[in-house]
Length: 111
Length: 115
Image 1 (tube, chains in turn purple, blue):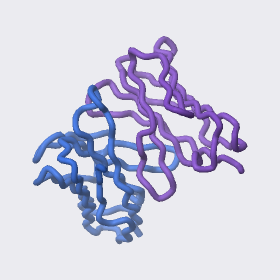
Image 2: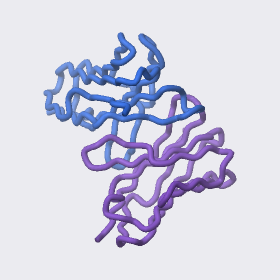
Image 3: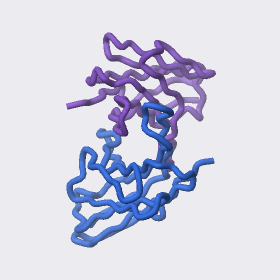
Image 4: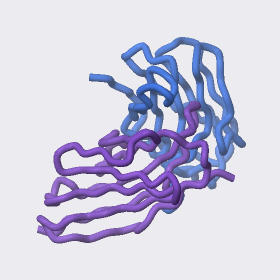
C-alpha cells in the first residue's frame, strides 16, 4: 500500500548547525508534500510545503527539496535554534483528502 | 487565527466504556479529520468528513465511529473502549481538499488512556 518512510527518527544537532530530514514516498501520483512541526503538548502545524511542479522552496531558514524521479523529498533547516526542537512530520498527498504521514523525526537542538 | 478545539485534553476510561471525543472548529471549514498518533507510527487517519452528515473511512476505522451533525463539530466515538485504543487523538480541519491549499489545522490533541 501507500507509505512514506521518514529518516532519521531522532536527530541531535548543535545550535547553529544544519539539520536535514528525509522522506521517501511510494505513490507516484502524489503531488503535494507538506511538512508539519509538532511542539510539545501541541498539535502539528504546517511549516512549509511543496507541489510536484516545483523542485525546491525556501522560507527563511527552512527549505524543502523534491526529487520526483527518486520519490524523495527533504526538509533542510539552517542555523538551527533551540526553538526548532520539536517533532517533524513529512506527508504526501495525491490530491484527495488523504495524506500519508511519515513516522516523525524528533529534532533536538543542543545549546 | 483558525482555532480547532478539542474539549478533552486528557481522559482515562475503563475497558468497555463508551467514549466521546469532541472537536469544534471556528473557521467554517468543509473538511474535518480524526487522526490517531502513536510513537513510531506517525499520524494515521481514522475518519474524514467533507460535509455535514458525510463521512469516509480512513486507514484505521475499526472500533471507531464519527458524527458530524453541524459543520463546525466533528465527534469521534469509541463504542466500547479497549486498551489498544490508548493513544493520542488529533482532530484537524481544512478549507478544501489538498489539491488547492492543502493545509490541515490541528487541535492540541486528546490523550486517551483505557485501563
